[in-house]
Image 1: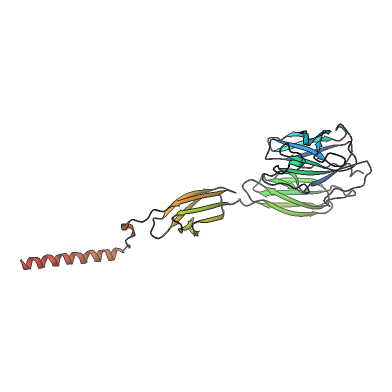
Image 2 (image 1 turned 180 degrees about the vertical axis):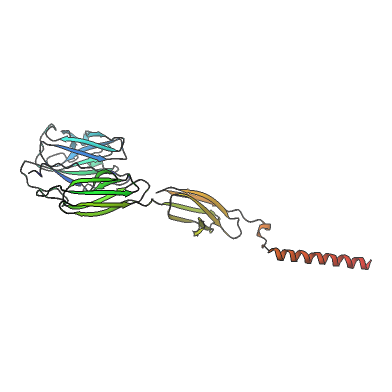
Length: 328
């Protein structure tokens, strides 16, 4: 029963442009009706999150967490402010909700706007599963992580390069690296490490009773894309002196920062330009190559040939002058 009374603080990471499906719930919470359940999360895309509840004998589109007589499809939500570090928290007192919840499994919906269950198509949202029961109910935490007989004796130590990365363990936001996550149950854990401007890192760890595992995450810089067009088309494209293709061409996996872009084409003056590439961004570049002038298009001679040619012309001129003088 002690395990049943253990309430796990569940954090949900809401990532811009990533929609969590209704079936992809975070690790479930098991609690006794009437207890206070601490909820917390991470939402970098909004200043507020809107919470509502669905489950047994509740309206299909949900109700407010703090008052189950208020329907979400009538504009009633539990609104929680997002803090400056993009985190939010809410203590849900299940014994003070203006009604009584039946024993069973409920879903808490966390949305970035005032959208009920029927209006989530264009919203970013996530879900948290909560099982409420009476004292003595025998059940385990969902996801195969633990059972009622297990004890939270494991820990994870997570370090990263670069530092100050966000860490999510089994769908729960835990904090920034370097980080130690304790009081974990034996079982399988998925660790996601992310930082803006860097490629994400994901790994899986199996913890045994009393074990401590160390995860070292290396996040390479996120790459950018260059889209190069030339007038006329068909110019050779060189990036930092290395041939990259024939325009029009899209160059992927380009390191962020300044690069030297050169385009060349026979009959045209080569063009160089410094370009700046940003991580995760596509940078379009259009370059016009001016045609060579007739003088520029004349084949280049070596100095020896030029001198020889000039010497020949001088001799011819002298010969002509001498002939004319002799005839006179």
